Length: 413
Image (cartoon, rainbow, N blue to C red; front, side):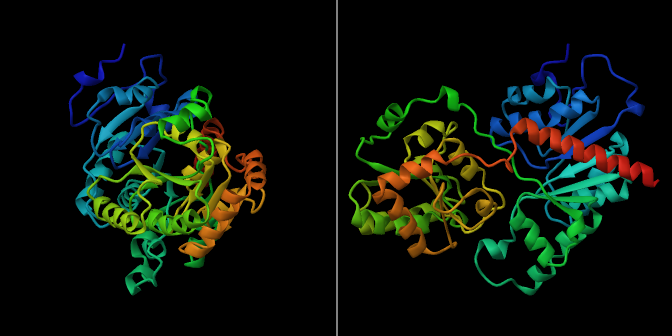
């Protein structure tokens, strides 16, 4: 039996499969450079599903974290699969050569055949190239910072040195939406190197969720209320300020309208923006019609309480919240970000609006609030399109991608 998680040393956490294994020298080694730490157990469960088909193929799987979670039981979905977990300090920048050296030493010890990284990409890709890792995959999950802030890029941002280096070193780039791929291609990145792989649908617990009446009662809503809701957190890129302005216009026309803002607002990077939102509410007398839930471990009851879901973000790579709302059967209004244009059919399951436009958002919301028949029709068609895979389909798809890339690399040797 494997040792208990709490008995392992804090600096390096390793657990190899307890069942029969092939000679490690003949195993394919897959390394996922997460590079950060787990902020919720949900991340662990999602990663475990991604590892499962690789483990089934007898690949030796390694996950690199910044540090272990305070609760070691979070790691059980991974350790029960036999995933080996290593800890390395988080890189301080894209040119943290000490971090490159640490990653290179780890790669030389483990000899991975495939390395996959996400938002922390320069260090693992440089180290992978120096260590001769055959397959190096970069998941590009977000748009550029100037796009998020809706401003012109600086000269440095146009040059995008770290991203261009990562693109050159990566064997393949997986963009999480067509919008992310289009941005990269527009900057001159080779289109043939970029593949779109949408995030999977991840909402769980719908079958165990409370019914609509119970969920609405939890938040103090009655049958006559029309509840507009969103899921995110209190930072400018999520567009809650835009949503509040649009809601003020809706609320002035229809007294039934209510707004539920689901997500954290108390973290250090959120408090200043949250205070501005509260000031706006107080100035417009909307405090009794708008609720902030704070962070919720389970968002399903909140989704159950909503009549309309809105994604007012200024930028998204591939917004999971939009897919989760469709899974919950909600008509959706979304800014044109990420894969919104790929999952929302205007007038069928919701509406699309230009990002940052209060007037367009207010108009779309008012249509759904005032027209009960239209809202019911959009809810009936609120389903996740086939282009968004299930977690199992996504994991199998990625496993096939990695195997194909590795086979090509080995044939080329």
